[in-house]
Length: 385
Image (tube, rainbow, N blue to C red; front, side, top):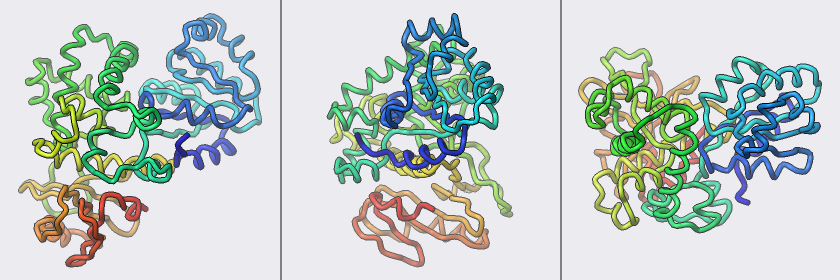
């Protein structure tokens, strides 16, 4: 099993909270991770028809039979369990008694906030990070290969080709998650919508344009975006709104959690096709952002990443807010150091008291150029703090 960086945080929280909830996309490795905690935990999947029927018909009896410590996978399928879990946790002095897993953050968090608030620590597990693959001696240093393959564990554990994995992944997602959350009548239109979103990665969201292209209403587009966000297909990065005397863009940017999924949705069938792909730079930016997000979630922390863009179109790809400063990060799919890579940093830097400045690129060296640190994409972890 590939060691997951979140494991250390998980062990720590199990010593401090009665329950731990871990959400994340399907097949991100949640079940594999918790099943390796040891024999202390009994595992139940609520996707199993018989198990679900038992839990629905006799929730108290089901939980009574679960044992001293237990894992409930895809627990959002039986929402009635949460109220009974509250009673169990309130009557127990044992920490780490229950682990809740789910692939739907909206349903999970909704039920937790209603019944289990204050009793449950919340974690998010995304697909593998580059550093996790590197530590397992499974990393590929070709950035194009990384963009095309993506980081879902089964791709690497079972050596599955992306062109076979992702179409099945999308079909499973439609059959299970979409039908659980929304009564979408025309799945063909919904798939078209997902593909249109994939074509807008690393771009500012224009919901009206997206709705028009999908031939749906703006309200439907908003609803479907919320669905895709809740089920860990895509996420939004908000614009930085610090105290600056310059008009800033207020709409968020759209990213997918995995670039391999994006490539599949856009019909990219080989890594060679990426070399001349019109979204090559966007794919790289999406990849870097997702690696940054994973670094925070794997540490049990919320994200603190934004982007900065003024009304003139001058943009910093990533802004990290820290107590004493901001980190400015530009993301460039270029192997060559260039003064153009730092021009936006130099333009917006005077608006802030203190910044530390980086360019993440595909060059092999990590030089400092005009006080800006250039960092190879494989060394992203060195600038995360």
